[in-house]
Image (tube, rainbow, N blue to C red; front, side, top):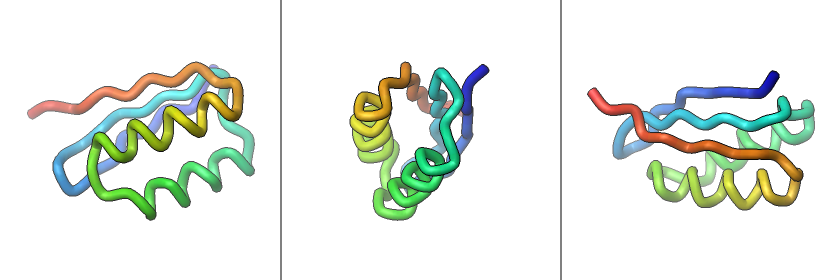
Amino acid sequence: MGTGLQLLMRDGAVKVAFHPRLTVDQYAELMAIVERVSTQAELCKAAEAAAKRWGCEFECDTIGV
């Protein structure tokens, strides 16, 4: 089981997923990242770097209309 979120950024929606599921501390760090960045690309890049530090698999996809 993992953690998946759909987030709305300035330039559109993005879906992120982490496997295995994030800990409480990791989730809090992810929320700090979300507050700091404003675009899909910035979010994917920062979240991918965090996932590498945490030893998690990571997926990031834009959500089209």
